[in-house]
Length: 168
Image (cartoon, rainbow, N blue to C red):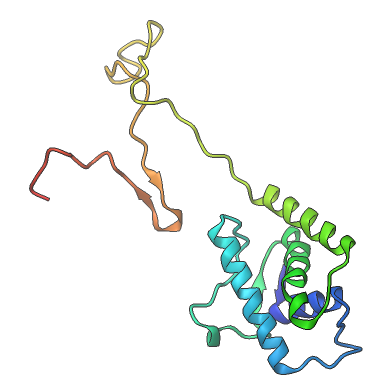
């Protein structure tokens, strides 16, 4: 579902007791919260919690009314964690209920975005008597050199490098 960055920021402010319908939020306060939001989401992306957030390359590239396409499961974790992050800037102390809800929402999001690491056999494991040569191209070992996943850019394959080759 699509939400605006302003929606997450106003929800975070309301969770720390600075709801927009009671307090007039100044543009510099909204901009500070926007910078904190983008920074938090970039940090999550670096930790492997990827929810489809469009991370800007510079501060001036992010806009409050920019639509972000995040899954519904990520919504609570984003604004609750942002509330914890911005509360000290406004002299607020988050309640224990807010802290527990933010932790539970982040844990649920991490469970939602977790992907198991595929495991393979090492290339030193003998194939054994049950594996016939015609089944595995006459290779006496089960493992293979799998490329290392490097995100969306593609795999890194170390199997093509020859350590004895000095022409590189």
